[in-house]
Image (cartoon, rainbow, N blue to C red):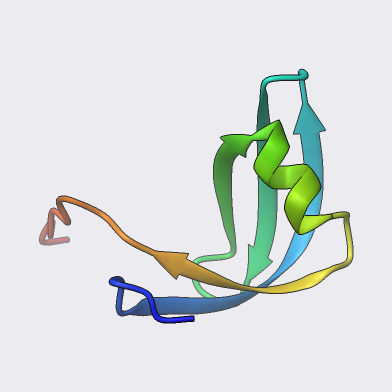
Amino acid sequence: MKYGARNKVNAKVKSVKSDGIMSLVKFDVTSPSEMASVLTTESLEDLDLKPGDKVELIIKAIHVLPIKQ
């Protein structure tokens, strides 16, 4: 499957929280140390994600704001 996004991060599912309509999935990644995704519960069920699963995160954003440190 092809994606329009070019940014990819390998990760492991850390936790899954669902309220029936929307779900929050948190991921452990190398850098940054954690990321999260909000998706529909239907998508969560289709992906069958559970803590410990290894996944590839595809990151697609409309804006990326660089901030000088």
